[in-house]
Length: 102
Image (cartoon, rainbow, N blue to C red; front, side, top):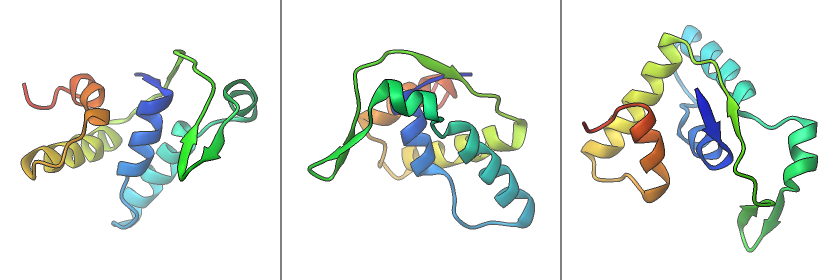
């Protein structure tokens, strides 16, 4: 699945920090896949400003391979946020990509 910088950062924030052994291993691999390598850091020039992370505007996306369990974890989290009325505008493209809410 092609994911933008914003989508990757949002997904990193959604991943659980607790779970059973298999889940934690899948989450660890997913965090590594979603993270940014040296080349991306150089190209995007990440900076912390006023409590936020900012970067050079870049519309490129990265292909991330998501297995069934990783996809299910993400879908369950997005559905829970939707049910609780806690989705934000940053979640919209992810909801579309993971077919949440219709």
